[in-house]
Image: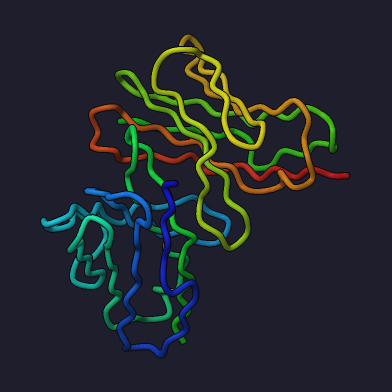
Length: 114
Length: 114
């Protein structure tokens, strides 16, 4: 139980394009999901908290117009990186809150912007 | 503000020997404490958590952690390390009224040599 999937697992795009990353809780419902960014050999940096049916809460320094988050259902949250640039290249990881407030993480999406 | 420290960037241990990965925390209140493991190019996998009750928590893959309130520590341990345990380990803390948000330590790379 408590499986979280992400799609795609790896995406390469040209600078200026937009990329959508999906995060799904497969066997449980999650009112709350989180989006993180991880740079090589570093810890996770929380980008935003995604709550079903309401606007996402962004951490300081994260541009909400660049990183669009939609949590339209209890099993799906999406992160869209708009007009991506090379500096947006990173490993993006989502998590969904399951039983007893435990976060279960997706396998991550590696974004490479050329 | 809550914080988590993992004082060792890397821990080296021989296969079959016991291992310890250290974690200390700073919160004002009763913490929820977590350990996650990350394999290369993958998301985080939940290992174990402490919410309340017994100070010794047993988790996945033979790992355990001991909550020590006086030392504000939550060290991860395993009696006999396996080469396959080599990975990046993250300690995280959530204040029980912080809306499920996790604060992560910087991570510790565990290298188990045959």
